Length: 249
Image (cartoon, rainbow, N blue to C red; front, side):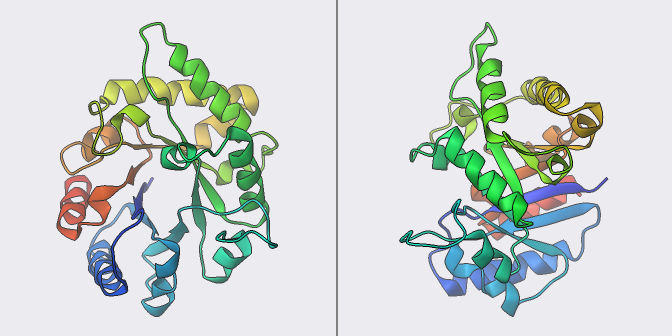
């Protein structure tokens, strides 16, 4: 099975010229690799570049979407707008969005709207800290149940769950997660999905890892059973991203 690599460019690069250069370089690289499915999620202003520079080896994703299809929502973007530009996936529930005040219920509304309109959610979960008693697992279970509320058995196969522990994300990360910690959470997520749906759904759902992913640790998480990786800052530096892809090819 192909490994899913999702490049989250976040609020980068600073200019259209830089974004197009990064897209072209990445497109050339991915054409040389097998067994990797690549989704790139650029900032909204750069989505059009993917129509201008078409490649069948890259799937276009978005970093966010609003729960409503249209209306008076200044500064927001609808799933219909994304679909019209060829967007197939959207990141929802990212820790950086949750920090801005997005609740589980609001994220759930966006998940349902996206699925209904054939844009597949990359649904992020993650705890802010770990405790020895394992209470963080209850926190993750709550995020999953609330975020997927109303998602049917036939729809869950279109959802990717990204585990991103907040303590391992960004420049201020406390430390990197270990492969053992990921395995523990992956098993737990599959149990929750099995309880919510059935064992077939749990077996089929893709669970990927994100959190300070780089060329040194990427293969380790894939070897530990991650179905893919959500890559942040190392996806906007082509040399670093190229090294990461080479490490896992």
